[in-house]
Length: 574
Image (cartoon, rainbow, N blue to C red; front, side, top):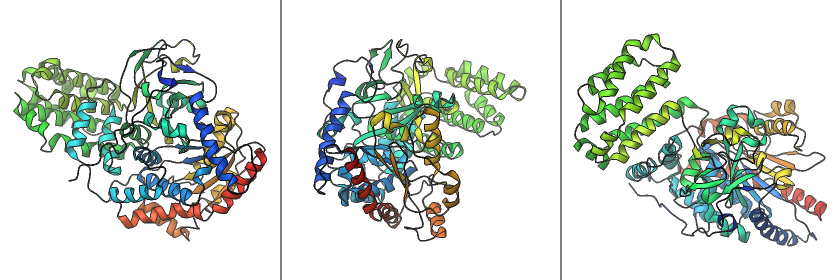
């Protein structure tokens, strides 16, 4: 099995103004660093427009949005960007903002030294990589053991080294801040990676801008209320606005999992986690061999296996008593599990008479008593044990995206939901709106035109309809949307829809599978069946090429329309 390329881009991050102090930045609108990058990118856009013999002094701000959709979205995103580049349209784009699976593509381009400059080469690299069996068990396991040493370990870490790595065949070690030099030079659209704050979403705050949390090469945080921390310091511990503990910046591998965890389908996610966990605990690895050499090693291995089964069975509403009885037999007599054994005896006696919340708490207590310092000190593989137990614990509580809250106890923010907790939990923004409209709309980044490439499953207009509702709730200008008309065309949409209002932005919306590139409703259905979001088997090269072609066709067939609209806006802003 080939070991994948771990770091394909060797450029180092360089300190910028946002790194000179660890203080939090509170600013309305975009940062000075982003303004400078956008200004430089504007020079590229201006030259491109002048090459079309347009006499313009001010260029329109064009934002490309690429939606979520798992590996389907990652491949389709590559096709869109390749074709935009080939048709000479990419140099008219100021921003690119991604959600979920499309971020897998954006991250990959960022980790290749010439990824944004040679999209055809990047496309060929994608095809090559997806046909290789390059998911390396030992690389993944080593990464998980290292991640388990962090106090902010969550299922996102597990997802990163298991599923996302397995699907994309890539584990890049470079970081988003490494892209500062390229963005400052204007050689690529300014990238925005979207997530959402789980606590704010749970409290219905996703209907306001506050829930959206963005990552850029310079800053990470909330565009509303305008609270940021340097991207290099996101994940470090803060209190009262001051950094109290420095943590290394998370790399693209983690960011891909954070932004693309697809948490909507819990049963599929649970099954996927179970399959990978069983592989890590049962495959013949150096850690497992060392664990079995420990005193009570066989007992430890079996105990961890059964604890995972207990949590999985609880979450899937199965019968936990047989597993508790197995644990009772395994733990009884083992010096490490004296307290845990006593608790299991109690659980067996009262399990049928307790509520589900009480059962969850008892299971949580059991996990806590099953991992103790004496056991870790005696083990030759403490990080391996930590990884296994932390994964089980996070699974029970369904903990994803744990991130130290840089606004913890920060006094200048009125919304206490943003400041009262030490940790925030970031998640796939596709669970709010499967496209990053809230991060590029006019009042934030003065966007004149949005090219929205939608790779969603199901309703091809859901992102448009959801964004209109969001904008109405937040009093943000957005073109009118006729839901009834779109519903009539949802099963066999066209390849382009233009939405315009009295104020910017103009929205050009491109459904991935449509009656133009698929010819018929039947072919559209077949495409959705072939490229399911939760398909975890490898695509053949023919399937990858077909998906690339479908996404490219949406650009190629509408090149003239995109160009005409860009020219209209260029003249309007001159």
